[in-house]
Amino acid sequence: MINLKSCPRCRTGDLFDGSDEYGCYSACIQCGYMGYSGKTISIEVAKAEQLRRRGRRY
Image (cartoon, rainbow, N blue to C red):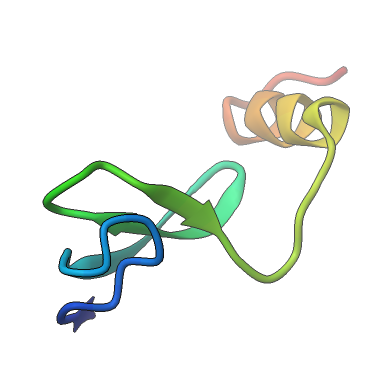
C-alpha cells in the first residue's frame, strides 16, 4: 500500500509498506526513510529465524 505525502522525515514523501526477515516496515520513496512498526525483535531472534527459513538448525 502507498500512503501519499505521509513521511515523518521529509513531510512530502510517499510511504510504501513492505516486509522482510525483521518484520513489517514503511519506506519513503523520495528520501529513503525506513520505519519498522509493530512487533520488534532482537538481532539474535532475527538471525535464528533467518537460519530456520534456510532449513538449518541453530
